[in-house]
Length: 147
Image 1 (cartoon, rainbow, N blue to C red):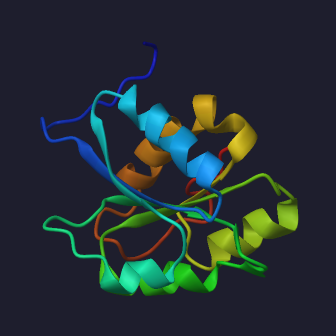
Image 2: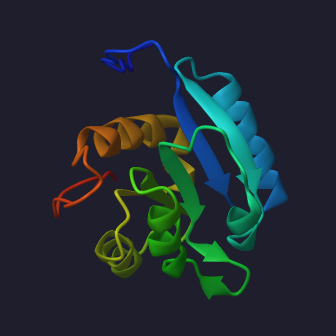
């Protein structure tokens, strides 16, 4: 209601989610079912599924869980950006420690959002990310630093 996209086109923003938690994958599907102007292309359980994923039109935003399995997923950021050069990666996590936030942004993430704040902070973080460095190149240090 109070969130405005300021979109100059009528195409929905294409989103892909990568998260190993099936409960969160279901929750994020429900979340995007209620978000006009966005389409959730798919929810994947791990980064390996990205290699075989075939989409006609690539995602504009990839939501990436910080912890997939027993390791950090920050190495996937570069893989995702190589596959889809213009996509913006937003890291989602319950583990919102400042060190992880900084590491994610340094690894190339356009934003970092606590899963506890998805309802209020995810859409604004995505809009900010999409408005920052439209060429997919340089990233500002402050890009996506949503709390």
